[in-house]
Length: 355
Image (cartoon, rainbow, N blue to C red):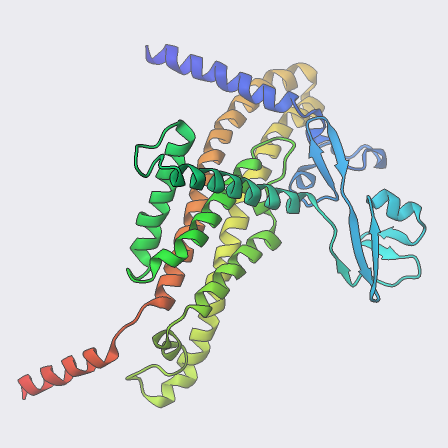
């Protein structure tokens, strides 16, 4: 029975991976295929941000919005910007024809679209579930339907096992909407990256840095007096030691969101690169040993990739959980009250008893 189950799993995994691979033939096509006989595997091209939206049916080019010397330029695509004669293409991107650099690039990119998709999908599901609860379903009766049950499980998990666990009991409720939103949005953005033609927005450092910055500002704006005392005053600590402790604590305020951004970015980027690279071995083996060996080895690489897809789906959810968990931990540390007066009186009482 075990052998039958394993063989069945391998067949299903092979079929799934082949469908994913065949559904996007340009997956490994180089962006500049006319530059010579270089490698046809565009690994970094699949994780880089683009000025087009890649689909299973082709590319949809996105608008370019550029600010140069206080003047705003809008084009429907990069091609239109170049055809206008007002801009030229360089290795670093577009610049104005007179050599003036772009002051601010507000163009719509593929990663930005997937950020929007994640947020919009989160809003739609939450709005739909909210209306269900207002009508009494899930509040006066049991939740009905798979989607509503999954929503309730996720929401209760974020509320009770993350927010309530790490944020003071009298303050955690106001942070639940934010924590639930970032958990759902990051999970969706991570899962979008599993599509062979799609991009993982969280594999972009600017996206993860923005999310971490939001957590940073929420943390600092909700910091208590006690929190700031531990950054600048350090109750009960000799005054001379503040010259050492204060810079360390101030640096710690910024290293926490930095770690949040890098952890999510590195995990999602490495996962996408790994999948593209392993599938790319099919073409490498074909170039090195011929089409017969390349096609034969392709069976193994496709099965391995299918297994990695399941693993990457698990990692996508785990990374959303880790980001949300650490955000709750940082917020809880800043919002916590330590009651130094009680501690000092306890110490004084203990000294009196010893005397």
